[in-house]
Length: 514
Ligand code: GLN
Image (tube, rainbow, N blue to C red; front, top):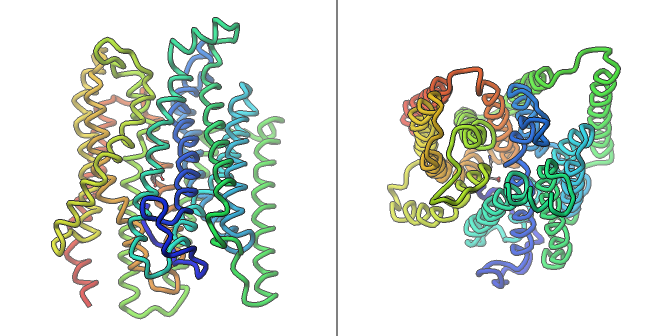
């Protein structure tokens, strides 16, 4: 995630260089987000595997379509709640408190998942969704608030912060995955008289422990953040404040009513509530939100022709980012199933849990991010434009799936393929991420007219949400569709998007020329 938030006037100690040349507060936020991502990715690494595992192995034994529907709904909502989460922090409670409450709610969510009942499973997912919405967008804003507007360390600060994200995402599947899936841990549980079938829930519990570390660390480092994010924006007038409060109250009531209706309907059988039905509803809601959001953006002001062109480019990049994430984020869904069902999980006689593949993306990212930063810098004036980088991103995710078509053919014959296949896929996907993700948000922020620049973070999260939704739902075809066809279709879809975007590079450049 890159830069974009305007520095708060309360930027703390511009000359503070105590954390790798950055303000001490960056250390606090680095580790808060590291532990939050640890909990998110640790739990996500085992989520779809847990849902599809047989009852005899402690899973929920959902069919793949149902598991993918729940998974897609969950990951979509995790990022969608960033929109109201950012707004609530901005207007009502400030980013500092929002991050704290978010962390606590996430932790409770994972605690709930650690309890092996159906009700606590769904409650846990819901709490993580709410907590992440309150935390994730606001930690990013706080990072921006550490620097004065003209501080040249700002981009580097965000790069360091992205490392924190990936450090958490790297470690989590190794630990949570080992607890949830490994024969070793199951035998340890059995030897102390605890049911080994519940190993999944120990994985979820570890996610809760990670978030606990994050919250404790955040509170301990609170003082280094100065006044950043302490106070919400003061509304223009009492009438405006009252209106915003009404919107918040209405939104909360409507959401609560919807959830209660679903629960009551499901429990009493008054109407049928299926995972697929709810997921379809979320899909429609996402579509309406995207149309509404861009409809609003284009009509909210009397844009000049120049501004209107820029908005069109923002829309194009939004669509490209959505497609990119919908392929990339299959790491937790389709590719996770491919690791568990079709890949040999053993190197040199050492057996490892299939969820460990989830760590590869972050590992590669940590290794190659400095290399890519160097390449872009070296290219200087010839540094490719944002649409070109987005196109490259799409080509690389497409290639990642493209090579798997060959592996999938072998899997169809009943062979488990070499772990090198997925390793290569994640390498290609990481290269794609390094082309697109660091420039994505900052490109959109630069393009958006100043009056709505603050909304661009929302556009970015919306693309992530849409992408995650689609990437989750695709996994529903796993098993009911021929695997080479499925991977081939994903490849062609990403390539088609890359081609369209490539054709738009020149017109976009011409549009932005003046
Ligand atoms: N891996 C990054 C994170 O978790 C980006 C994920 C995304 O935006 N899809 O923040």
